[in-house]
Image (tube, rainbow, N blue to C red; front, side, top):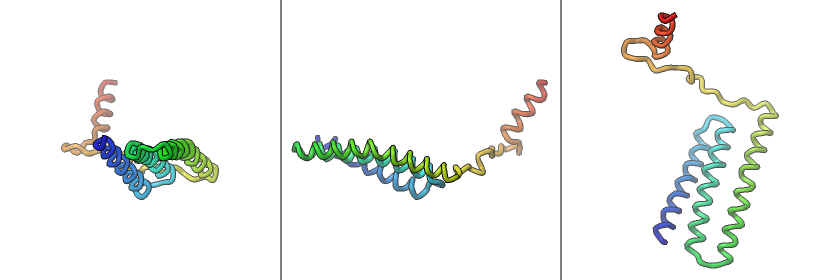
Length: 123
């Protein structure tokens, strides 16, 4: 039982750490919301399950279940409403300016150039 609690604590802590890093490192509001909502909610759920497994008391279990239900119901709704309001205000989604770049091969031709040459020679 204590191994399961330790695994849940480490897993929950890592997910909350990942959510925190995601909020700091992501480029725009939408991806930050995604990082905070998904990883933060699952991380908190793992921590709450660890508390429920450790303390064998009905009042603790009821508080854990109540907190978990509250977080699972409100976090996605809050993120959705925040995203919807930002979209209504005209907030633009971040686009990676380097998304269309292709890695250059050794013979100084890109993979897309080789594919284009192959298609043009077939025609």
